[in-house]
Every structure is written in structure tokens, then in C-alpha cells.
Amino acid sequence: MKIGFEKYNLQDEILKSLKDLGYNKPTKVQEKVIGEALLNKDLLVKAQTGTGKTAAFVIPICEKIKWEDNNPQALILSPTRELAIQINEDVKNIGRYKRIKSTALYGKSPFKDQERELKAKCHIVIGTPGRVLDHIDRGTFNVKELKYLVIDEADEMLNMGFIKQIEGVIRRIPKKKVTMLFSATLPEEIKSLSAKYLDRPVEIKI
Ligand code: AMP
Image: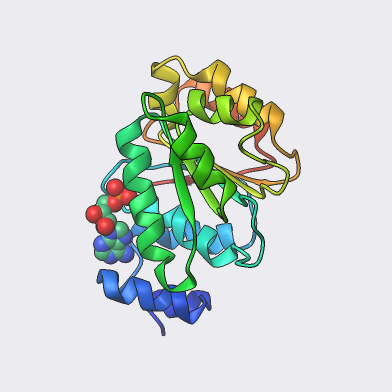
């Protein structure tokens, strides 16, 4: 029996980067999420930070990215600039050998620099909801080819009052896509967000 990441039939480039990172076997949340995500299921995941939840969505997304396509294929929403930067690091590490291009978008940082990165080849965008919405509305972020949406630390985003912006983003991106919602807690607001925007999600609790 294979206990490592080999069982998912991931591309060699992805397996090689996991090996470099010293990720020898999936954590609990990765064990439950990766297989379902590779099947393009919508997911509602209750998991805390420190469980390996970031790689749980970054691994299948990096696997699914089509390198030839120039417009963003995945969008990851994060409550803070710090978390967006951290997720971007994880994407760069896991996507290294596949040469995956990613950009982090957040406020209080020059719009122009972010615009330039979005103009170049960019497979994955990680950002805070307000700044992401700004780029979409100014036409600097082309969302037409988005196939994956991750709402990370959803309860944090709700606590910070980002619900309007999250819904604004969802309204502007393609309806046909895979959505994964990650949250440390599942209060009513998160359940209703899930009911409204996720399609028969697989529920995973760690
Ligand atoms: P996270 O919950 O995403 O903040 O991840 C917590 C920590 O676990 C990070 O430092 C990751 O680099 C590490 N990590 C994630 N997946 C694995 C794995 N499969 N094996 C070992 N460490 C991991």
C-alpha cells in the first residue's frame, strides 16, 4: 500500500517539489481533501491552521493548472496580506518544477506593480477580497478562465466584515467552477455562504 503522495498519480514535477519540501506523506486534512479536489468536487472543510490545510488545496490546484494558458485559472481569497503572501510562497514552492506563475494582491501596496504581474503569464491569484475586487472592476484581472475558487479562513473573513466583497467577487467570476471553502469554525453564516455558493459540497471535518 502506498502511504505517500504517489497514490494520487500527481505529475512528477509536483511529487518532486513535495519531496524537496520534506512532505513525505499527506496530513489528515490532505488525506481527505486531495482526492476529492482532484475529482473537481466542491468542498466545505473545517480545519485549523497548522494542519497542512494550505497544501491541501495548493497541491490539487497546482496539479490541475494548464501551463500553456496565460490567464488566471485559480483564485484564492485570504483575509490578510500576511496569509496571502504565505499562500503565495506555498504555491511557488509546490509549483516550482511545473513553473507555475502566481501573484498576490492586497491593499496598501502599489496597484501598478500588481497590474504588471497580472499582465504577464499568471496561473494562480491569491488575494484579499477588496483588492481582488478592485482589479476585477478596473479590468486588470481577467477572470474569464477561472476554474477554481478557494475561500480560505472564511470565518476570519466574515469576522473582518468581508462578506460583501466575497459575494462581489463570486458574482463577477464564472459560475461554472470548483469552489473550496476552508474555515476553522462553521457558524451559521458560513453554512449559509456554503449553501448559497457551493454545489453539493463534500463536507470534511478535521
Ligand atoms: P498550514 O496548516 O497550511 O499552515 O501548514 C502547517 C505547516 O505544515 C506548514 O509549515 C507546512 O509547510 C507543513 N506541512 C504541510 N503539509 C505537510 C506534509 N504533508 N508533511 C509535512 N509538513 C507539512
